[in-house]
Image (cartoon, rainbow, N blue to C red; front, top):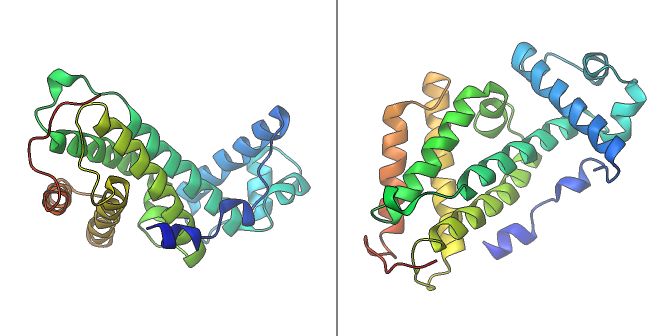
Length: 218
């Protein structure tokens, strides 16, 4: 995974990320408008000018951050991946967990609820809006999600250190994306049935390295 991530294009290579409060507010408003237009018009149905009009900003303001629509879509991918990382980082009461698989399933199911409720995320993460550049950025996002999931697991259990847990969690997330992409192709969203298969597959993979019951940690 380390080799893969070091070769991945950084999001900042595609767009300009603001640092001042005023710029951040405008940047987020532009992304909100891109999200809305993507949901209503599809990935090829709008332009930078449409984004500017929807956001209520000058076209030059959009170009200040994003040289083209693809750059704005890449920024949305980064935003969605951060949301998935936040979901996986949410504390889970110990009384609701019997083994590490419960944490995996809970995080994956809450992530599925989010992506199904946000069609633009479906389009960009596992649907027709994916490009080579956005896939590279999503790979970076997957490493962040894996780290968040790892910290959640470590708060409850002592994990084996070989192989590196963040590496195999990253691979598990890539397995998930493969199943979810298939579900999107067949149904337009991530179904209960394929989600169940996803959970079984990822837990079976991780079980190659982790016993079902691990010592308590945290």
